[in-house]
Amino acid sequence: MSEQPAPADTARQQLDPAAADAVRAYAARTRATADQFAGVLEEIAANGLPSVEECTPWEELREQHLARLARQRPAVA
Image 1 (tube, rainbow, N blue to C red):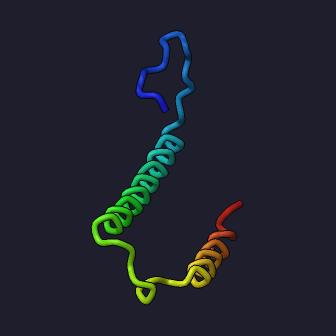
Image 2 (cartoon, rainbow, N blue to C red):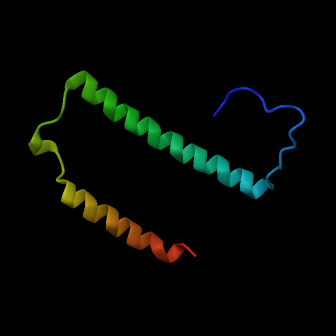
């Protein structure tokens, strides 16, 4: 995305307040996730990779994620 303002002759469609709030909430969640990820990367850069014993196997992570998606599915219409 560009930090330059949109040209003056371009009409922008305004969002209704509920949609704008939803976009702001999504931006906040995305920012929080990015901050968490950046923290993990900084930890790795400062201290190296964790030992294998400290790590969670990818299969377990996959199953947790699939279970989370299955719980969310009924909420999606």
